[in-house]
Image (cartoon, rainbow over all chains, first blue to last red; front, side):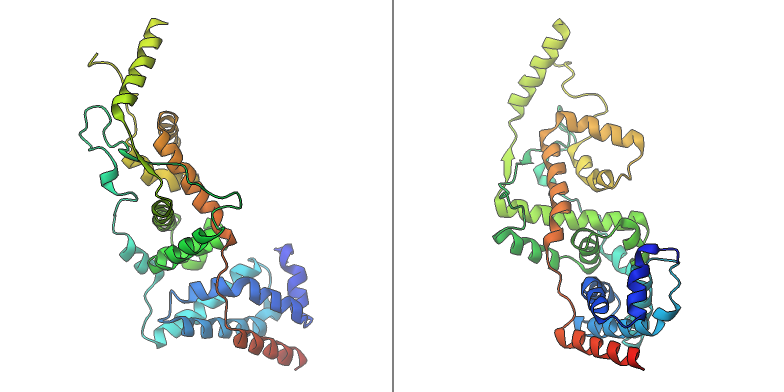
Length: 232
Length: 87
């Protein structure tokens, strides 16, 4: 088998090791529900797709040859099952179409937070700048911010929500996401950027972490530097 | 004093910088653009903080729990597994 990492697990499945199967289900099902939901109209139907996929995996595991990772193989089966189901529900919008519809070209940060593009000295520079977050030692997911962040992710449009969940919550690589969702690396980055930007803005608003930049002081400081340099 | 070079020539605007951060973190920027972005970061505390926050967002979410399939579905799958392996 090419992917040796998966070999013991595949052997365990073939040998009827129920614990191994339970672990596999628990590891991948949340992401499978996410991906299935991009093909079918509801979470309930997506859960049925995941169930059907696992049965198909069990039936086919004897024939698994390890040319791809087990995970990639499982998600390929999922895509087939979900696509068929989506067609039956007459709701088969390809993910790339979802993604295109979400690419509205809106800026990542409110344009009002920058000086105008024709500003004499600092065109397009921060006027209301981000400031350090008072993040607790245990990290951003401690306490109330956890809820704030989880809600922000659920409120994202579907394609962005799926990409940030797979990349940043599930820890998938960019290649894995592109393959499972059949999108280009460029499209994947656009969706990830929009998703992370929205989450960042939500956290910033929650912490109220911005400050006005005093450009008179900045100018004076830079001029001082320039004067120092030219006298050196 | 009006001619004093306050910003480096060819400085990136912060409005551009914020749109490039994910490509930068993903290592997808061409060398010239990456260098221009890094040069801007050296003089811009706002963009430096923005970059840090985007890194924090990217690195913090792995602790969230994603909702899985319902427990009845899980049980049904384990039953099916026993069934299939027996037969």
